[in-house]
Length: 309
Image: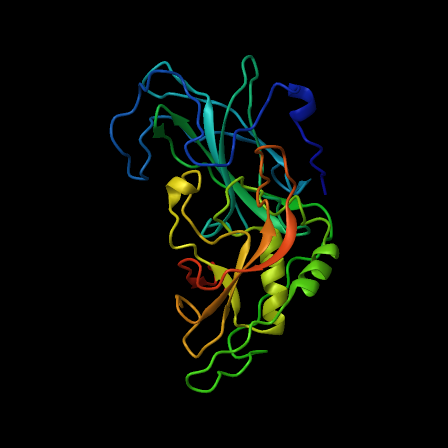
């Protein structure tokens, strides 16, 4: 098996810099020639799909591998689309993304480089693809390439399905007490130094679940499936770097009543389990740290499985 050794990072030099994984982070020239309405595949830029340089084939690459593509040239106009958007997924149909971001080329560098922002699970095969972007228009997606993530770190435990390891409903008119899981969360966090603190905010935004949180929620649900995420109903993409809000990356909810879990807004305990999520920068840099702050009833919340269960 070929091992991807960061092709292009050394050869191209430190001038290649990946952009933020947030949508809208594309830098492009000032003109948008060559776009004449949407094609059958939805693309609006008349360019071919980028050629994927690596990692490809049977390569092995790091969890935060650098993805390289060639810039594409317009079919009907003399333009070169020097920005590209990348998607990474554990499935070839890209039904669920494990990372997404965009990057421009660097001056006098022949390839466009993007470093995966959200570390991929070790020991599994992942798929990636790219498309050209130029002045708000975009070309077709490339065919997917694949590589195997290096390492043998175990993935987060699969959360049990409903009905397994679940505390029975309380009597009518009563609520279940909130289990204090602070010590267990600290212990589980210490057992996975690969996840904390580096994987508590890999996309740079607060309102998406993250690998460390997924691991903690998975462990909590092995104890009681009443645990879940907070969908943060008071926040939207404008608060999240343009990304859709999935769940607060530093909070958990516990269903204390008889209502169904998903969408429950009234019968839940709410707990903040992290301070300085994504790192507070003012008035000075503060590293994230574990906490156990109960804020039940202080703000609107909504229980969600974040698409995981």
